[in-house]
Length: 313
Image 1 (cartoon, rainbow, N blue to C red):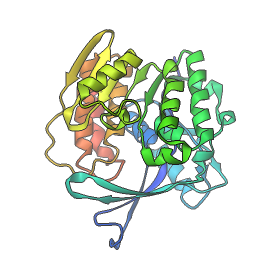
Image 2: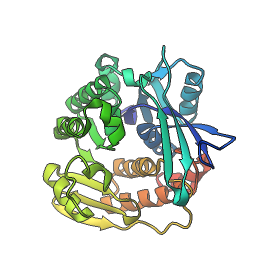
Image 3: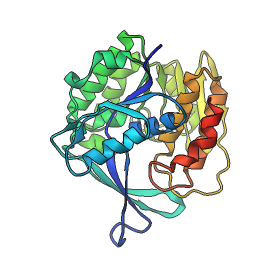
């Protein structure tokens, strides 16, 4: 029996969001967010035992960040407070729930992740490891740390899930498209499940791809197990020689799309680790992510997950 179900490696930042343009809003609401951590929050709320590997700056925000994650049931023993600053980002909402982001994260404590910060026994204690292209992109040392973590996990028989989560501006200082492609290729042979998004994650792999079916062809030629997220167009999958499409659910209200894909990941991985058939796990993830869209910020209210939690018991 493993001690944890899911461990994630990444950076979680302070989130400040506004209902108005950032340049004119008189108020900001503080929370937190980061792609891997957002996924862990959803998975934890749905009943998984989760852990976070990171570095947290000892600025005024640091202790509160850790306390918030612990309140979510996430193990933070490998996300210590260290000298430094935490990244911060600002969200200004646009029409239709889309967002405008402004980041201040260069040189953050989490970007100084090193391979020596990894604890092999901790990684071995999990059933699954989640890594992300965003973590790879925040610094050269973080990229090396992700690669080493993936190697360790594979050596212990831990399943590895990889969300490329390509962010062009974040990769600019690390070498751009070519560096993102190299980072993708170096971990791919050790990945058990690939969770990309369309069209964003095809930009650095095959920019000529025009639709999801072409994207799935490209991705399935690279990896045998792919679940391709495509927002309102649902998800497309390739696994064990079979392919399929699970349409998205109608959504009555889109308040904010921030973190919806991460929420989807958390719900899907929860069901996946419970050996739920793939189409059913995808359908469940669609339902959870659709509910998240009605709330602002990366982390929705806790009570959003109550009914879903009962479903996965």
